[in-house]
Picture: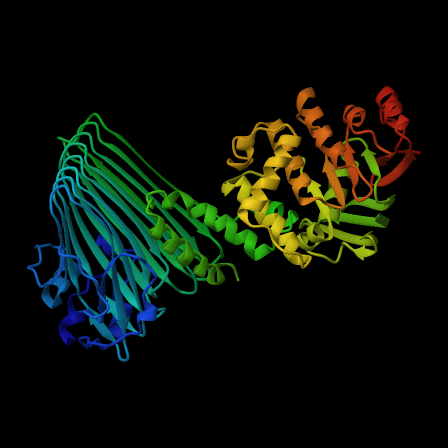
Length: 373
Length: 247
């Protein structure tokens, strides 16, 4: 896979101005080989599950319903450099097809990477919901060692379909994670998404969502909890192509140590997309003088009757609030954790599924030690 | 018993407390009155351990334990409670969760069993009823969108649930109308007993009509310049603080 790193997007591209992939060039990534994992690595969730280990479907650990199967489908064409790389090197991914009017409940999609030597993974997943279909997808990425996980997910929601997509990026400390998610959302359909970013030395989640029918609705929320020298980038392009659609983005970054967060959010409102309701908020909490946030909200509006707002705030924990909590008997690390948890709370609003909520809360709990020590 | 001996403290290079001597025996309520800038709030912050104050001399102990050597949360576990003049808003933190976390931290520090959510809510609801407060007080975020009176009532609710040995009320009457003042005073009076003492810091006498203190001390220019019974508060109300600094 030596040609792999020749076509990486460089910082001269505007979309990659804040995130530099050159660290990938220090490694000679090999194609992955199947590996066995301990089932104890899987979260305790009572639901169907799709388990990928090093990019291979683990059939023994997976519990696949009729509407999910392994698939090496054609990649939809894209001009995004990482999606092109994914298409060139793509591995089989999951194909989910929920028929019209079916409420498919919840399913876990977990990708576990076990890298002895550096490996690169290029799964391509496709998730399609028919008219009025429903699904909750809990999407976890984790692993050990040095690896580059570059998944692409193609999501398409037919009229009035509802997908709740909860992503937990909990990759290994030394890992690279660059996910691209395409979402095509038809009339009155809803895509509810929350990403929790905890792991990886360098990561990016890039959403390209198109609201293509009247009354389509999208929530793209995220919380990034970073420490050390971690770098995480949340990039979104939401295209309002139809009238009466709503998009909501609340992205919170909590940055300790020398970590760096990036937010690039772009809302495009086409001429036809009258009565668009767009909202975008990016807030960063800097826990250290060495942490950095780069925030770039963009609005591009061609319709004349729309409501679009965006905002960005950057702050630190308030010493008055910490003292108030400590004066009530709460030790300082716990006080700081409470305030950080409160800071990201708003981003968790789309997480209405109980098991997903509990899983994410536990993952957040597990991140305190790196943030408040 | 709270025992303060020759306590001096400064902020930056400014000497604020200049040798305070004060003893509040267990079970008693003492008031500290004084003009603006006398050092009243500084005393409450130094006792509760807020950053930014440097103790330059003297001691403060609670039942013989050195308060000044402890972190704020350790003082709370030892039984100190500060009712803030300006209670702090905590967006995203539910009030019930906040008070339960505080109570359990204190219980844990004392080696006592913690309360689960159900047991806590039962106790909190009983307290709310006793204090004639609205039940939604527990469900809201801490002090967010509370009126001035509600914030002070929330301080009293926390105090009632955390059961301190010594409560320091820093200008709790400021910004309160008479009805809110009565509710706050009733809350404090309900805690009166042999195991509870309080230091009521106020600029005005009117709070002391509702929380009748055992003793009144006058703080001026960083020192206690006069002490007396509750009648001293009325005297100050009639004649003001003028002339006391020289006493």
